[in-house]
Image 1 (cartoon, rainbow, N blue to C red):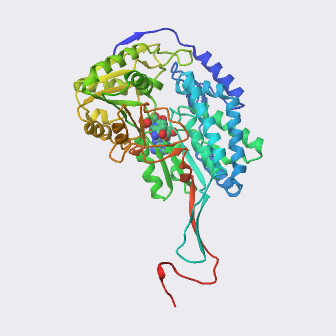
Image 2 (tube, rainbow, N blue to C red):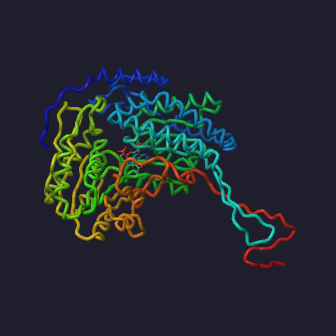
Image 3 (cartoon, protein in one colour):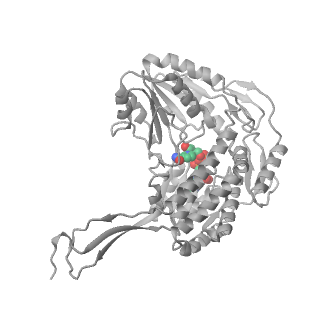
Length: 513
Ligand code: NAD
């Protein structure tokens, strides 16, 4: 890949100062070790520097955190749900108060541009508000009984300790989706964030503990453990963890899913995506180009819902690709904390190598690549121009999720072919169609349309609202988080039959004695 020389980034000392100030404002008192020390490295993709080192959670400390959460569960489960909601409500208020500081940390650790980092914290606020309302709406059904003088109903009970494992690219929102819902459902939780984003996690934990103090709830309803895969494995294998909610790559899901199933624990998996958009001849192309640019190049292609495949009707493909390439050329690339930047850095060198490798393979398979060059701000950071790749057909390469801004474009002739291409990959997270033809739009959302957990019309694949259930099918793992009735995954259901008659009729007309 060629590289483009670009301007200056802030110094590591400057970024350290910003991180310290944000942590202090968030009330997070943590031992910030020297960059070279042993432990979890809090680094920044802005420059590639290690800012601080944080002590890694030892196996004994992880065990103690699970024990504390399990102990807290014994009282939290019988605390009235609206009272539990008060804790989440307070957390939401603190997030409103500290939105900017937490967003600063998200930008520092995950490299998101300021507007997206603020959006991520807003998503936390939104889910807290949703969960407060939910705390008065944990409904069970009453079902018509076949027996006279009987009442048949369902009640929902808290599940236990929820283990939460999260990915680097949504370092705070995904925790809050789980935490807000689990806490109002009466569960307690232990969180293992990505080893790449320990500072944002420490800040969230500080806010959660402050919220608990403010409403008189035990701090131990929410625990944090820090480290890599081995620390996460403590949650995977511990039978006290009733539900493991894990967000990350398909590879991670393939490792943890069977291990939790082995001990008959529950899993909620939110794994990789490989999202497509279909653009039909009737599409509003002006709107489509804007949506495509945000979905494909936003967050430097590092969203699970990033648009990675564009399936375009042959008659409009040349013009559309030209417009996307021209829109891409205008995207300001650089320091994500600077106003006006739209594309920040890749998270680390491995992501960059993956991108280079994928583009090389695409060329070898006959792909024509636009963009994709590195913007060279210095050795340790990896900034790239988003790439558009016209492919002769949808190849195996396009069945993989490369976590970088590469948008592959293929063409179709018949609508059925477009749907088949959308569904041909192993993942099933998000999808969208750009069309003004109502038949195409409805068919896309029908049973024989998109097979994904998200199927949008005339908007991109990314940027979901918290009101809907979020998640995907096939290798994306099948889990649902966030809004709608996703709360049911965090509770157990009991079916109750009450006989208020003086007879004892048996179901199905059975007579016994
Ligand atoms: P990753 O799989 O490398 O790591 C995710 C988390 O899992 C980290 O906390 C990591 O320490 C932990 N982990 C990894 N292997 C583990 C194991 N065997 N046992 C226990 N814990 C383990 O993912 P990443 O690079 O941080 O994030 C990017 C990936 O996450 C992409 O594939 C993206 O699509 C996916 N993602 C999915 C969603 C979703 O909602 N579907 C949301 C965000 C990210």
